[in-house]
Image (tube, rainbow, N blue to C red; front, side, top):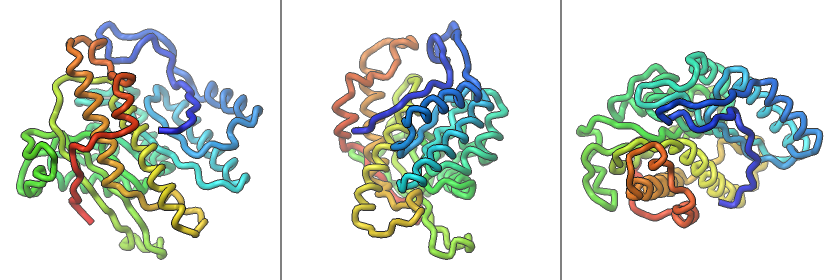
Length: 314
């Protein structure tokens, strides 16, 4: 997608945590991250960073140090006359009712990490832990989006949710290329914009979209990571194009309008293509269900057009 990426590991494991025989390796702590940050700064390698994306983090001290990184990046950018560094937070905590990080990270994300984020990309389980809202219906998902917006992020992307079917869906699945979908997996995206009177909470406006896709049997590790990365890329490209038409250079770039339906269609259709290709490769072992990213290069660069988004609140 055209991004030059610097990768810093939060853990150094033998393999991901989905393997049946466990894993070996180390969880990095906050001081180790700060040491790496110092080295990057000493060599002037922090001066042109525009975005920060975080995913799996194994310790609270590392998570706290991430905020030090974010503050340093934003300070550097401001001093250099650049725009606000955009923070996309994937609050990786667990899935399918199971945690795979320490429980104290739930409060850490809710209390001091997500409030600093511009974009947050939880799955259904993670949304429920952060907001305390159990999601059964579309209305539950809308309430959860509002709760996440109230914490700070202007863009909320629930990467996967299984919702009860009902009248609220209004047969909108017919907007999809493949027509009606039984037992779909849903993606919900919400963008909050504010009027000039920011002290008035009623001035908030939430534009919410939904896409339903077929569920593909199996469990595929790394789907959340891929989804967050794609979302960062596609929302940045759209926001940059929008900014070219706007002469306002104030410090509200984090609230720049994004063509949300177009971005989530690109993300969702790429995700579906990658997971479908992985499933079709055969095998039920953990290793066989590793995402076929290299084989899906063309779909990542040129997202297919299968599933369409429909607005559920505005």
